[in-house]
Amino acid sequence: MKQWYETLFEDYGKKYDNENFTQGTIGECDFIEKEINFNKSLKIIDIGCGTGRHSIELAKRGYRVTGIDLSESQLARAKEKAKAQNLQIDFQKHDARNLPFENEFDLAIMLCEGAFPLMETDEMNYKILKNVAKSLKDPGKLIFTTLNGLFPLYHSVEEFCASTTEEVNATYRSNTFDLMTFRDHNITTVEDDFGNKKELECNERYYVPSEITWLLKTSGFKKIDIYGAKLGAFSRNDKLTTEDFEMLVIAEK
Image (cartoon, one colour):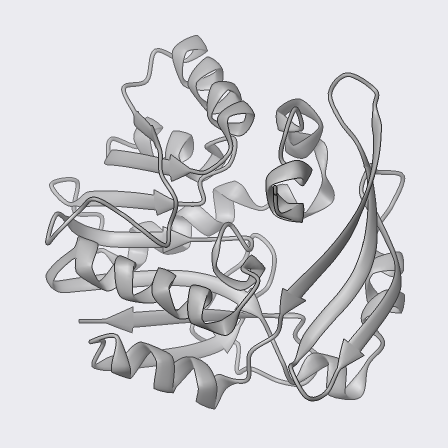
């Protein structure tokens, strides 16, 4: 049986690119470049690359990027966009829980909940981090964003999603946040590229900073920094607070 995230991303490439949470690409790539000292010789893997927005922007800037995703329709859209701009990007279909790479990349990015907190169990999310660590060289760096578990303790996730959804496509309702599992269950309604409406029962895992730190340390990362993630404006100056819906994590092997 298909999981909700597999169904969600089917035939959703064009519409996905117009969602408001995908509009911060340029600023996010500026931050990534700074973090790797603008070193064009480094190999980058974009995990859960979706329609390839970060892969494409980094390739435009002269970096060698491999983009991986589970969704064929998202990858097809990514390839189409890269081809239109004459960019050489290696897009491959893989499951982040089972990557075929070993000590191959200098940097891994996983942005905008591309893979990590969407899995059905904590063990699967942990598996993703272990696979990322395996794919990275030593020293290697991982930059990713994930849902901040401190946020739902102080705010309603449903109200937050409603306030950030302008006249765009995906809407979320009936959010219930489970304090025992730190999972938010909701019903997501989305219209795909062919105009078909889909209603999906989703659940996503929110993590608190101490959990992320522990998971990364046991996956082989030594230095871990966590900040608040501002859309399109990542910065090491943004201390993580209960107001941040997402956190920005930078981990080094």
